[in-house]
Amino acid sequence: MSEVRGAARVRVEVVTPGELAEPDLAAWRALRAASGAPANPFMEPEFTRAVGGVRPASRVAVLREKREGRATGRPVGFFPYEKGPLGYGRAIGLGVSDCQGAVLRTGLPLTARELLGGCSLAAWEFDNLEAGQGLFVPTAAEGFESPVIEVGEGYAAYEAALRTRSPTFFRTTTAKERRLGRQAGEVRFVFDERDPAALRTLMAWKSAQYRKTGRRDRFAQEWISALVRLLAETRTPGCSGVLSVLYAAGRPVAAHFGLRSRTVLSCWFPAYDPEFAKFSPGLILHLRMAEAAAAAGIVMLDLGRGAAEYKDALKTGGLQVYEGAATRPGARAALSWLGREPSRRAHGFVRSRPGLAGYARRTLKRLGRLRAG
Image 1 (cartoon, rainbow, N blue to C red):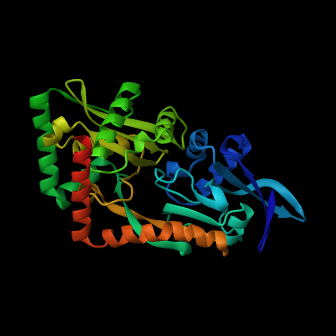
Image 2 (tube, rainbow, N blue to C red):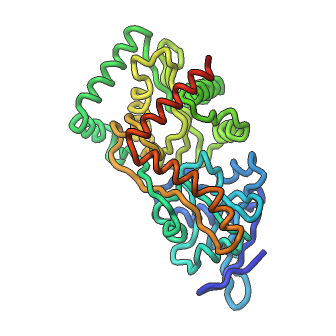
């Protein structure tokens, strides 16, 4: 346990996610609700506790304000992270978490350097830092759009806007859905499928997609597979796993696994059966998901950072997320920078040049085909 000295004195207690007591979990949820930020399920304690179950280096800094030399006992902030060697830290679930940051009482007088010091961290890396994270946004190296579908006014309003904005896209997608029904059999959609076999099918499709495109297969990493299975069983108001499946004649043709809160559905792992590619089942699935989400009281589908044609076609706007690292001056922070920044800059250089980015994607696909062969 350590103290952070700023405009206020804050005591920092570092625990594992599993050690958080129920009053702390309630305080976390209350602080998050009071923040005014979208209710992204990745920022809820359930996600951190799930990661803690598969990543032993997971930690949470619990901040308690001190008054008259004594800790009040009431938490004023939570900072989830994973701790590595030499004081190197990273966002909880880095690599799969789509929204990151600290959960702090509004106006808490604290700096990033003070918080890292209280956690004995030399650096903290993030790649999907939430907008509004005043402690860390100034340290970001780059910002990105995370496209969203807003359905707060109902699906009918979204569909009407989509018909106006992208009439050809909407007409083509709905025509393909009708053709899928005629040629493959009755089309059925389940928003919250509980069949474990459907989840296994989705993960197999996604693994094949990763390999085909030359990307690292996330589900080949046991901790990610275990995390998804664990979250598929999670059912809380702030963070629940949702498996959505599009069927044709009773056969899964597209599926998506994501996390939802009361008002936000974070889209995470979409995939489809390549045998049905000509019907664009992934697009059909997303339209059905938007309709079902609106009916369930969800106001926003967060499609996640990353450029994709389907996101451009479906989105109504976007949120800002950031990549970078917060550091404390010192040799360990310098080593962290040397290990991270050259690779990040190389990726940024490629992304900012469409021709080069296209060449890189084609090269990855060729490598994927070679591996598959």
